[in-house]
Length: 115
View 1 (cartoon, rainbow, N blue to C red):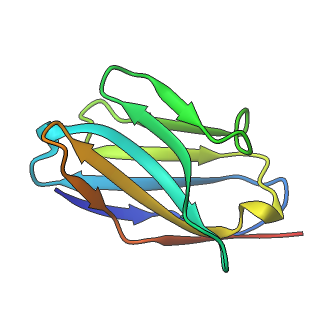
View 2 (cartoon, rainbow, N blue to C red):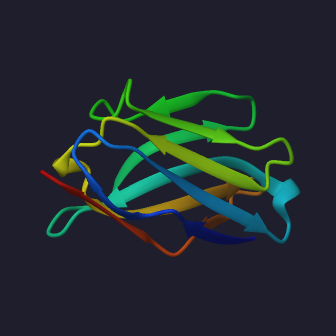
């Protein structure tokens, strides 16, 4: 499985961005897809997760503002980010776990929110 993230950029506080993560390879093996982020000087943290049976998990800091979703083919995972805050500034990574328990990371995409 290969993951290609895109969609980051610079936005003002209160604005929106949509991140995309396109999967290729053995995508039928993917069970869970997630977005993580890492701000400078901080540990990487889970932002949102979506399991194969449709269950979602969100960090408390993004609940009500971010939505994780997939397209019909499940080859692309999206992270819709609304009402962005400066503290959302980070490098965002997509991540997947297969049914066999293998883990894959995409490259990061930078999100910068100006105040």
